[in-house]
Length: 78
Length: 116
Length: 249
Image 1 (cartoon, chains in turn green, purple, yellow):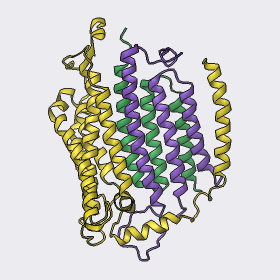
Image 2 (cartoon, rainbow over the protein chains, first blue to last red; image 1 turned 90 degrees about the horizontal axis):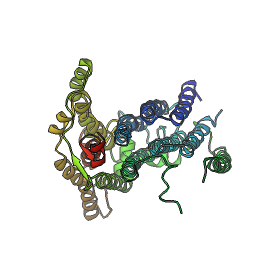
Image 3 (cartoon, one colour; image 1 turned 30 degrees about the vertical axis):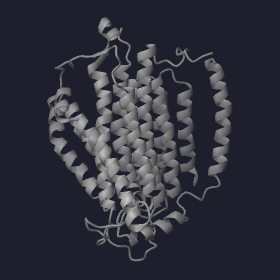
Image 4 (cartoon, each protein chain N blue to C red; image 1 turned 180 degrees about the vertical axis):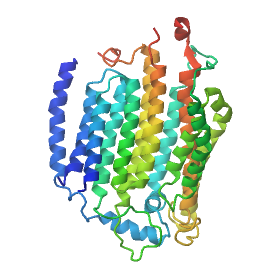
């Protein structure tokens, strides 16, 4: 297994821990976006460009945007 | 070392589930579920990978029909998986917004209306 | 159940699941092996249908039925979110607040990249059978590209450009077009979603039969669906407020 794939896999594992350990949901949206980018880098090193395109569009743009809009709606206005 | 990719996939899945267990906010839970689903993408693509070959997109017609490329079927499965994950996340976020409207909180420990 | 009980249960159950999964993956073929029976069956079938992008061929031609199910899931989820997030009786619409500060660089970036992103989206959808991409990826790029107007402009700007009622029709027409291709395949070639159009030459735009048109149908559906989906969330977050929130403000 090449070093590039090993590094990409390690970054994905660390990114998953980072997303889960971020408690504030509005910060977690940004961490999720970075995790989506790390996943698409991993998919490119695994020779899957179609899947990487899809993951960039969905995991980096759409899901974090929806999360931030949901956070805005459920913020306690005190 | 040859199994490192599969171990990372299992690790990401279990990390996501651990995040769901320790979560104090419904939106945090939904994001952790999305992370758990990413573990399955890694597993599928790791199964379909072959060392030293190109992606399954051809520029010109392949010389012999059985050219070696990475497995296209698991990549198509992963594409469907990504779409379904995004739609499930959207629906769960909409439910979390509605829960906040009805009960005023998104903390699962305070949502006692379903208990006994 | 208390948090401690929850953690203990997770430790026990998670440990068992981890052990079983690790035992399972240790029996898989080595990472990077050359044992791929599905690839050996799928690639010759895709090349026989003159499709360069084998993944698009699997999605729209060899296993088109799965894509029909996936698009139905997408359509249903957009309907579900629209139903869940519709304003309730005790909620009013308010005018969205104008103003807010925006860096000039952000505005320039948005306005320069908006036409580029839309062009990339159209190209990705149209070349679904040739290059990595296809209906879904191009649709997502189109749907999120339009929201550069929201990020680099204002909510008012995107409201003017985005007719949500028309896009709801567009989404349904995209999904229906996919199903109609399937029925046409069933009528002409006696197999649902069969590839009935002329195959053309490998590597040209109008090759691979019906994959191009199915890719465009899926692109229309996904782009419209993404815009409608984000419109629901934007509407709820920005324009709608309940009477309680208005009283607290």
